[in-house]
Length: 291
Length: 273
Image 1 (tube, rainbow over the protein chains, first blue to last red):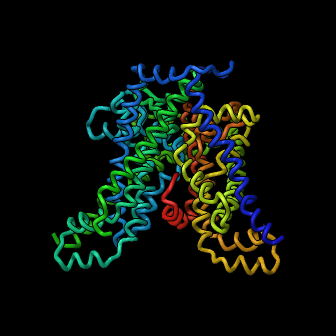
Image 2: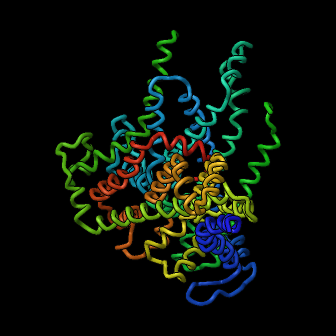
Image 3: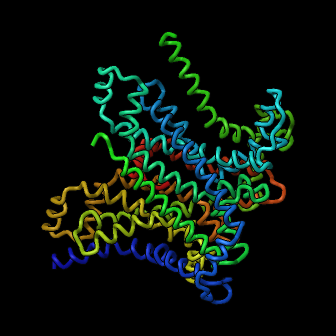
């Protein structure tokens, strides 16, 4: 009896999680994959059209524009977030006064929802009422149409994303830094290594596992961005800040082309998967000088 | 340059940089306390001439703001309770039992970190509709409760609990459920606290899921309500800024009281959020 119970127990424990998981993640993922090969407006039943949606996708100039725009956004957000969070972590890992206070401040925005953040920046960046244009005015500069000009809107969306996320990755880097034994630095000092050399040959290589997680996570997060853009620019002006997820949402729920939207979702999944694999491969090839 | 001057210079740089992170939030708060005339006055006043809470009163009395707030609380609390229960059960099974399929299930959970809602937006909508969960608060509570991150955190923590504790309880004749609820859960308090905090925050701040699932206004969560408010033709900034501040309060309170858990939680997981 006791043995039988011990055998069956783990399955019962894992079951609720597994059921929800199966119904709401695994099944939809497979179903979505199927839908991407169909033409479907939700009202009728899906009709199998093979690679039709993907062919349409590859031939659509709009898709390539949105994809390259998304890549520009992601590959701006990731390096800036990465560099900034690492620098902040290195500064705030040292024994300086009030480091807890500074950490809390940089972490603060990561607690807020992207909706709240988007609204806040929209208010600050308003053309005729925003405080930023007032400050420019005080400095004797001309006002800027922050969110109604395609270029500045893109820059500000990138800025707001970095602003919102940098504290989170800073904490990750701090945790990584605390795992580096102090003796390495002491030895380096004895050998007369400069601060830069210490960073270049100790800190940076030993932070590699953390760095990898930060790059992968910030990349995935940037590709997923939806809420911030929805409230900050609504994808505009025009469609200059409309990225892949916005487009999937519009095609699915506004145009009603589920097959085409699903094909884009499959593309997004492939991009995320591929990037993660590439990043792990690249970092493994480099090897770790200390192991 | 001597060391002291250099030090002060560093602090000045750090302090001015940190202003970029707090001033926007402070500015939203100050603006929300201004009257509807003053909020748009040019040049803008830095501090309000006349402090008023009328924006908050209007926001709460007009529209369904109280309903949105209640919906958000209901979703965040219920979903967190459900997440804790099923994640800790699954984490326990994966950490403390050597059963067939253990590794496969664990791998399955972790692999789906690669499938965010953004990717399955379309099919999840169909699934929820067929289950009658579309436009229902349960439709945003149940599906994301099986978080891979939560299972992972709990499992990692529970592996550190010694097996002898369980074996001796079994010899004493305790049922498996009793062992889990009376022994394992109390021993896992740190990880469960961290998961509670993160889960509450994820749910409170969640936007895309409720946005896809909810269609009638009386079901809206705060985040969806604010987003729709912005989408309107002329934005009512007075109420909007007040709502924005109210939407910040719960997470800021959580942050204030449980700060140390955030650092631990992030360090433990190195995942998601």
